[in-house]
Image (cartoon, rainbow, N blue to C red; front, side, top):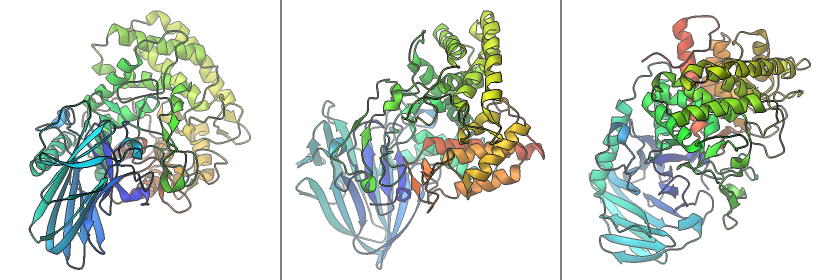
Length: 607
């Protein structure tokens, strides 16, 4: 089974696929990010795949076509050079902010020989519904149809392929300058058949569509520009365009530890990561994407009344019930079981989500002149919830299933909810609530400064009364609770840098053992170091962690500190969000000169 880092992401703003450097598409959820897969060899050798590769031995190099999510892989053999360009088709003629709204759910694979003569092998083993279904393969008008369960697939191509049981296989030879194109169209059994795409034209159009989007988003001119722009494209590819939801990752159950059971489904939108996401969209894309993301959050949350559960995550369409179950028939990535679909963290109470939503509104305050009465009521209700519930325990940002505690990050984000609500009060028609919110905020601040500080560790720790460090506390200066050069903040940053960091990789908490380093924690450390006036160390950490990205610039959720391999769901939106925000923090610091930086009061100035 290929390493996680061996994959590249293909996206069409509806679903996603992963293609290996050996030319095998081992994961594809066509209709929606969280829809059942058609290919799932990523999670089981028999889970389905589509490979195109040279016969015999080869070496490969690859890259994204500049400004796009199309991947080009060059195979070098003893007889020649084969290039395969892979992409998920965008809707015909889609450009700029409109890309992905009408994606047709078609995987395009273009094959061409750049030098010599190459014999090419093709194998399509579709296994719909996470590998449960072996389709019936039969000839059809325009190609080969693969039928099974709720899925209908139509394979078209320039060379004859043959049915081999439930597979489609073929071999052909191309000489220098010759090419071929194959397309795989997906539809549900309830949808009518569609006319097959012209693969070459659709690929050209898709490349043009991505480049038109990238061309609109060249505003970031700071350091690490190429990494920021690639991360922006990843975030756009992980946006479910029909709603504006940003999906945490396109995969499920890639393990936090190989062979372990910490395998979760991340194909949903996390409200809890919302303000970090919105800032990254603003920096690397533009306010339009940020505004759509906020609109999705506000509309999906609906109204919140006393006693209502405030969800931390939603389906791409805004669904709340994400009930989790296991797929016992799949072996899991390198034997890491169980494979889970759905995520029961949706049931958890995480108080930090209150601050995340309110921070998003604060960032967008100058663009919310048309804030609806329902949205105003929602934001007032979230502030009320923060005022009333901050003294209570919750599950915390790391979504542990071992019980609730007084997590410091949750308290911090409740403070953010109240602070931003007070500032937004005139817009929310909530001036009468300011005294009550202010009183609660003062009590909360005092509690954080008292119970959140550990005299024995000489740092703010993960939970009230704890002596365990937690990298989540690094958000304290980022959200403006204390300045970055505050002595207590500096002591906390120094303690985390000393005890939780190895080679730029930050573990989440004291005593994490063999658990991988969480990429977002390294980028939070970068931002905290910048705010403390230590930009040289911030750059060092940034370059160490960013250097762990794979050959096409993608980052997973975690990195194994023992051998540096990428682990966890992949690619991880929050990791790329952290990269963008950390790069921007470095850029702001270097533009301002030496010394500690004040937290920038969003939104940033144009350009």
